[in-house]
Length: 178
Image (tube, rainbow, N blue to C red; front, side):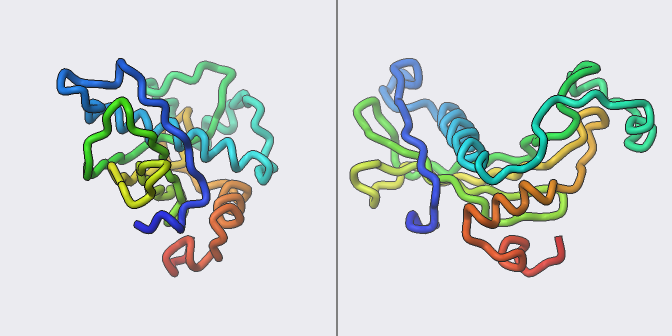
């Protein structure tokens, strides 16, 4: 992964509670940093998103078309009908993070599929970019929250990814039809 290809960097605040008994950031906390950076990334997409983000109430016709409600996803009768679920998260640890480190997380979308997309992450020193603490990868799936099943990505989200990352449709999908 090349740091120059990331268009979004999120500054990390290393908290005392993040540290393990050896005074390193605990391995599980890296996933929190990745999650915070992903959230920040999506905040950066807001200017390009044209979809109505208000909660929707699924009607009986939608439910019948989508199948049975998935009781493992708690949305209630008035909630978001579609959104993202994390399918996979990985992290490769390269250098230990300590309390005094100044770190930032780079986030980018590297592949856009029909119902999912892949993000890559890099945690690096914000003052010495050659010091990379960890790299990561996340696969997120656009889902119908009422059924728990994958659903095609909205065109507005796909376009926002392509515009923010400077990708063409063919590049974003790896040359595949999305």
